[in-house]
Image 1 (cartoon, rainbow, N blue to C red):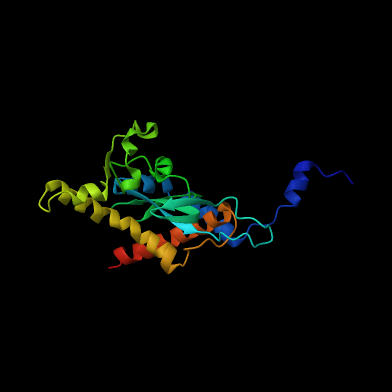
Image 2 (image 1 turned 120 degrees about the horizontal axis):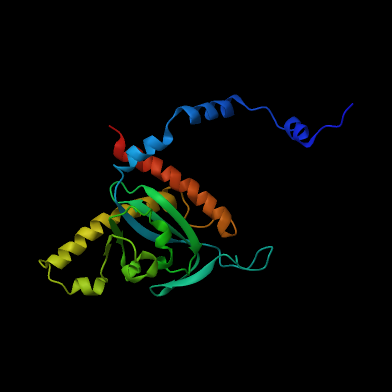
Length: 225
């Protein structure tokens, strides 16, 4: 009996494809995904709203490792300190659907993640005061977009109610409100206000799943006829 070749051995250990795998392969060859994507892209909103939100982690060292999670860090927000991570998201300015998700430890400034949250085809980018100065950063120097970033509240309060600049700030706020809806679903409805695992990797995977579920719920809300 002749000795089995490496190719034959590799083939022998391959499992038979399931009906599901065969069906997916057939679907992949039949559906013109690239053409569909190009047609949909023409109608996709050109604006993005970016924002970040803190997710708390246990600060206690009373655990098997005897230490805090090394992937989590502290940050001061207002007059309070928070320990944990951040979820950064980019959403479209029409329905508020999430198109980008990034996670970092809590102390990473919102601005540092702004580049990775944009898909590149935006004409407008909306953000709160945490993104002040975004247009001056090197990574955005080649972008042909309008950065519509909120003014600090103190400066807005000084404006008269009938001042066009104050009315413009109100319009900005109305648009930015759409980015709060995904955070409402992820943190309050799905209950992810605190991390479930140690480390960023597992929490990131869970948050990506929740972001997908959030999009399904938001799409159902807006698109059901």
